[in-house]
Structure formats: structure tokens, C-alpha cells
Image (tube, rainbow, N blue to C red; front, top):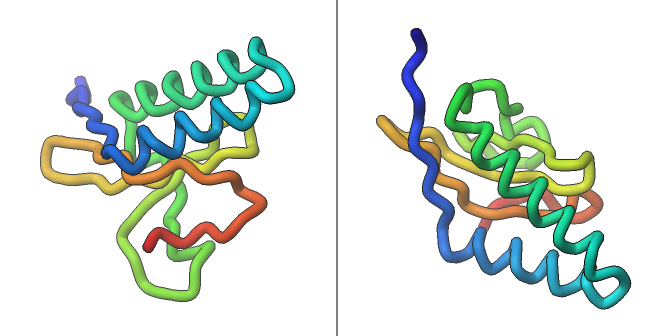
Length: 101
């Protein structure tokens, strides 16, 4: 049986998720709740297999060991795999710059 990982969402990632929800709620409060819920569900799903994410270095112009996974095709959850932990660093819209700075 594969181990279950722990996830930790950074303050920066929490802030970005809140900003996504606030932006969408300007147009549709129910949709905002659905999108934020799906982002958190995708983060939770990383506990089962964090290695399934794609390598961020394929989307940026620098070397990095960060990974990302898509939530609803529009949002990239950028994270790092640590010894016993999946650390979520940022959530970004995929139409923008995918770099993590």
C-alpha cells in the first residue's frame, strides 16, 4: 500500500485561492464556491499520488523541481514534494505566466 502524503498550503497559495474566489464571485457567487471547492479537492487529491503532476520546468524558462497539477483546466496548483509533505506554493490561472517567483 502506498503511503498517504500530508498536504500543507502556504499562506501565498491560500491568498491566491481567496483572490480567485473573490474575483469569480463578482460575476457568480455560486460559481466562485464551486471553483474554490474544486481547487481544494484537487489539493486534497495530491495526498494519494503527488508524483502524478507535471514538471513545472516544462512551462518556464528556468530549472526547477516544482510540479503542477491542473484544477478545472484553468488553474495550476504549483507544489513541491518534500520528504513527508506536499507543499502547495501557489495557485495561478493558466492563461498567465506559470513561473513561481
